[in-house]
Image (tube, rainbow, N blue to C red; front, side, top):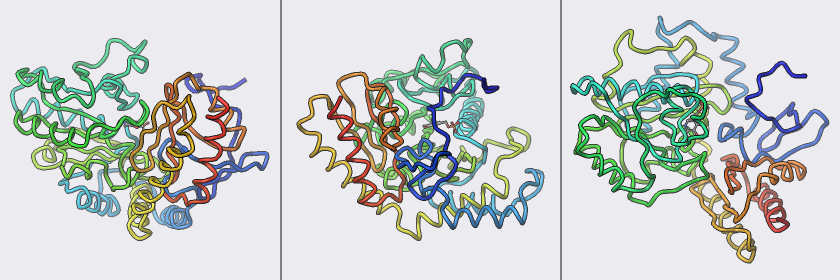
Length: 385
Ligand SMILES: *Cc1c(COP(=O)(O)O)cnc(C)c1O
């Protein structure tokens, strides 16, 4: 029996080692990792520079608390703010914590503007985390089931529907709009090219904060450092986590202009957040992405993978649609396909299934050979469906 609580249902495999795009289990078998711990280990497992950064920082200093200056945290804040055109950063340990900070900033923004019972607009089918506030923000009843009363107040609007947001323009209680630029957990839902630009216009007109949850889409996953850079906009608040630490737990909430000034001493904090170890590693991640031209690889491999799938699956009846942005890729099928998870594992490939879609989040460092390996297994599985 297991002494773990039953909130996960893990597959029957235990990985003991990772190297680049591959994992090895406790029986010595190797697997291609096309999931990356759900979009986390974008630079691959056991990246030599990251292992070295962890090792050297561990020998130097792990933790002091935020009651004292932390050099790497200040450097990381500056690096991220310059990359994202933002003015201030807060560090937590996860995506949910980054979003909690964003929600607290939205509440402060409301109260600074005499809105006593603020509402944040979020999208249906969104995912923002598992804490009480972030699951309340999440537009998925399954995530919320059993946890009432929810944190009020979030209104869930249709994603990629400007009118659905405009309809709330005369509601004086609205203080912010919070969106994923591309919805990840619900299966790589890519909105129209100018959707975010239009949302930003509405936010600016109404003095609402635009909060973009880039926990999954950020740090190169879509082929830009941040997905919203495809729209040439700057949000008021930007949240990051998954790929930022390549496996060490770190979340960041960045903010711009007035939104960057709302957290004042005593209003928010985290014991572990932004410690020397995780910040040192995140700095290394950002450095590798830039020096090794990772964004270019993401775009090249994305084009290659998507055109291969499009070509090889065009005569397969069970394929409804292929959606992608960079290395967030989903293949939507016409029928239930949860069995593919185990079937892929049997063929030594790690994937995700969400709804009726296969979701792939391959490493940002994947090469053509490894991409072919992934494509072949997926095509085989889908054709046999
Ligand atoms: C994964 C995810 C989160 C939650 O991150 P945790 O680190 O699990 O708390 C929030 N938002 C988005 C878009 C995510 O993909």
